[in-house]
Length: 145
Image (cartoon, rainbow, N blue to C red; front, side, top):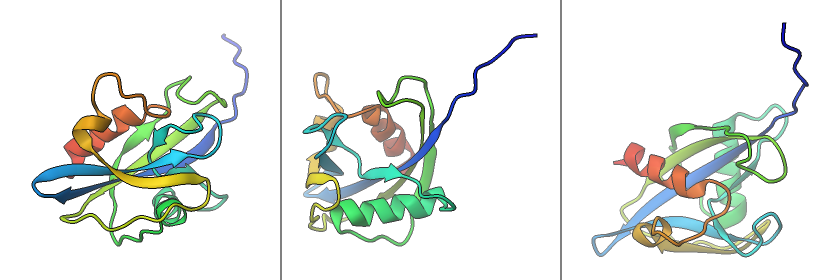
């Protein structure tokens, strides 16, 4: 019988919002105001509150960090690989939506800035995003099409 050490996992939820302008696809990103990854681009998201549904958390975090509200988000997946967050074990639930326009975001909460970034630039080799957000954007892109 193998003994295991209990591990505490924290839940987070991210919103991967795509928008289109001039035939080009963008993803909504925030610039992190706090460590880890202060100053890096990241998806709007954060901790799931006690008793909160993960999709509700994605909606709440999207509004808190960008000022945007959406009706429907589509489930993308769960991200739980050890080491994906330097603070410890964080299990992330990702949700996505696609718009045919780019609403103006307003940074709030722990976001130093909120901006639309070309998807090609976000996924480009050499672009460093916080956590495993590059993988999440790629998966969400396939789910949103």
